[in-house]
Length: 289
Image (cartoon, rainbow, N blue to C red; front, side):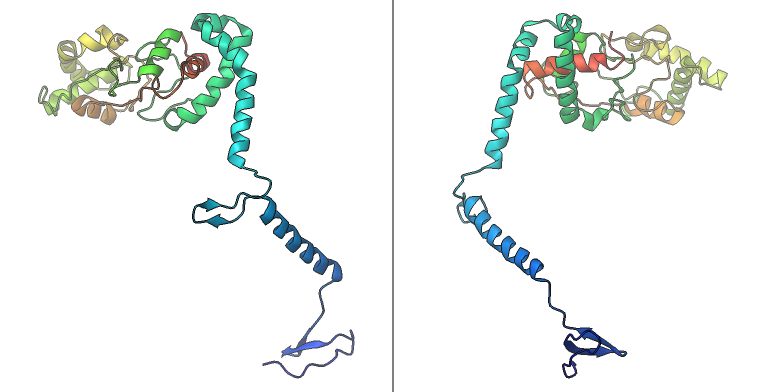
């Protein structure tokens, strides 16, 4: 409860009447400059409400006397940017992928556009630096399931993998345990043999048992020595580049139950110019053939 208001003898300012532990609160008025700024902001806000879009209503919002729209401003900026790029896009459209790569001006333009398109559409799976994640290929190395030439990369981007597109990249690895093609102990032996191809096995007996099984069931796709076959999208098994992990457990899981990653077909979603820019950009990351 406030006590009786009195004038503070030291400052000459009235108190609020509040007192606690011997401390009184002064009723010091705010400075005039602060008050006038407050009034000015109130006047400015009223003017803003009148001039600019401000209030939501049942059928939309108040447009403001200036008729400004941030959406329209963005659309205009995009239109201006597209006009500035039109001459380069026209040249890019007429040039082949190889011609773009050998033309420094077009290459610079394509790389900039490809980087932007990659960040928007591809980085969610392949990473912002295209380093990949488990189940999503690293695009910086020179290991390609379906080939790393400009033409092959462009085709993969356009049609994707294991989707509903008629021309999608498709590779179907059997689930050897789930489909009862091999028994549990045979799966273990084949996994050990696969480890030996990259010099990571420590069980020579299991390797010797797995070798004939690999030859019977796996060589047709992965080739002799596990060097891979891009015609089938079959990865090389003789290096230490693994899409789903290269330890014994991960390899065994792949053999037993197979893996079936999916990549969307970007052809129906992106225009041909953007596809071309993406192919150039991905090819430039370090692993392009």
